[in-house]
Amino acid sequence: MRRLNLNLATRPLRNRRLFLLLGGLLGLAFLVTALLAIILFFQFTLKKGVVQAGLQKADQTVKAAQSEQKRLEIRLKETAKKDQDIIDAINSIILRKSFSWTDFLSKLEECLPDPSYILSMAPTLVDDTRIQFRFRVVSPSLDDLLALINKLQDLKFSQPRVETEESNDRGQLTSEISVTYERVI
Image (cartoon, rainbow, N blue to C red; front, side, top):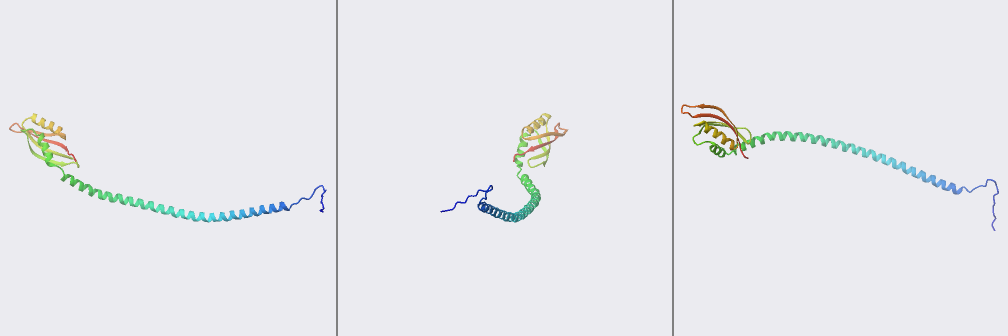
């Protein structure tokens, strides 16, 4: 038989081994967790330094690429400007060569009344689509001159102006007219 051990003291002793074991295990778990946290902290600190160095290197690469892009844009603009002058000159030559003088002269002939005739003409290319010209025309009367000016306005000739007007010994009017012709491209 077993003996029964009764503690009748006012402050009985308690079995503390279980509490010490649980406290020790909890302390050991805390130490292991703290050790792992410290190891992870140092690993991430080292990785952070490597990542920051990589970011700085990438930032320097981006800045170098941006400065190279600006340099190339300036060079491109200079080249385009230099080439644009040549292109504009060539296009101007092509447009001058492609101007239909027969169409222009036939329209001018349509405007001219039957008894009138042209003495001289001086064309000037204003831009790629417009020609300004001065011509001297001989008209038998003022009505023929006005008919010429009205027909010029009707057929794509703009801004007709009579610059000078003289009457010769036969009663004919010799007029110098300035007008602009807009061609279709």
